[in-house]
Image 1: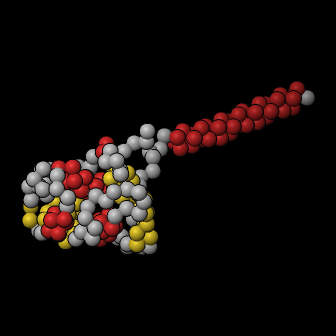
Image 2 (image 1 turned 45 degrees about the vertical axis):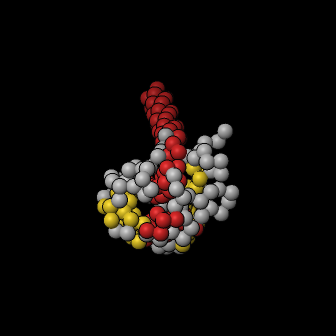
Image 3 (image 1 turned 180 degrees about the vertical axis):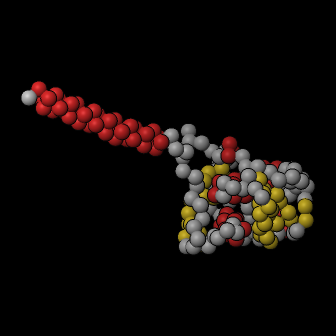
Length: 195
């Protein structure tokens, strides 16, 4: 009788130990899941989908001239492995101007002769009419250039720099102010912050 009692006591301890281990595994996995969810990187901007409408963010000028403000809209564009047509559609939408109370950054219906991707650099060949119709002054030139760069880099994080050509040629500037001889990186600090 002592043996059965001892065996029953041993079985009870084993069951308790197994229950404790199972509870520890479940609790540990729940905590790990919560930790990973909290420490994940924030979601990247919406990447183009194979077909259909794509949500994009365009950088237009604030009405008070204090920086850029994002305007979100959908564009129809099929993006496969070559993102050049998507970037071109994005730039054409930027040239259409803002829908809200923002200020356009490039002349309406500006032409983009071509868009090429070389590594992490987008090479944008602007039509000469964009340069001719751009308002004079360093502020207008900087606004136009960084509106294009920030819009591309925000929507396509793989693009780190943008090189500008005009009518297929390298140009030192668009209007004599901003050096465009080398590719430029985005400057998201130009975006207007709340308050």
